[in-house]
Length: 251
Image 1 (spheres, rainbow, N blue to C red):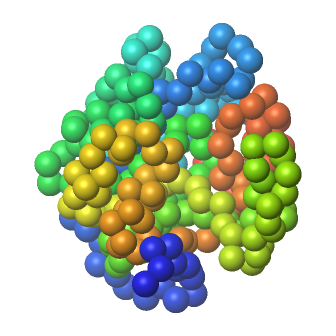
Image 2: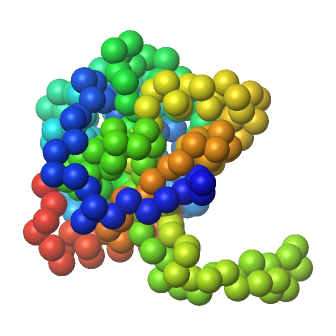
């Protein structure tokens, strides 16, 4: 069985029993080196609202999410707590100091989640345009299958190259998807995968990889191209353009 499968919205059952408790892990501990400025990208304004606030608001409004734990840089934590209070984000349980790598930050946050949480929804703090309904849809898929993530079909032709830039092959585009977040997993499945991965788990850049390594399937739910990650200054302009072109956002 392939470890990555496509979960069509059209094939989703009308009623899937939701888990008793879903904890959202918001990873916001990156160094923002590609932004080229001193300010953390989590605090950049997108149409007047900080990036992290837009992200948190989506999870605040998602009916499937019960609590939020944020992993942030230590120096950003006081400002982040202030924003949580100012914008009345009631689901935030705690903000913890992130680790040296993304995965270490995730592990730090998971350690502070409620013990009754049976599903973990892991999301990049710098993806402020995710919609609450997309969060609920991927949680629903994870409840049915154990592991699911948002994703979109790639638009561009992809080339695999060697260290000198020489093209080695052109993968079939129709089979390629760009994986987004949130990525949602059964807590039991995720922790078992972490244990099996051992020390190599800390160096992975994508949580789905942990589950794929165990041979368990991960299903993709088609998301939206607007769910971009703020990585460069150009991404800020793109996000603002998306907000101005649609009213389908909440903040």
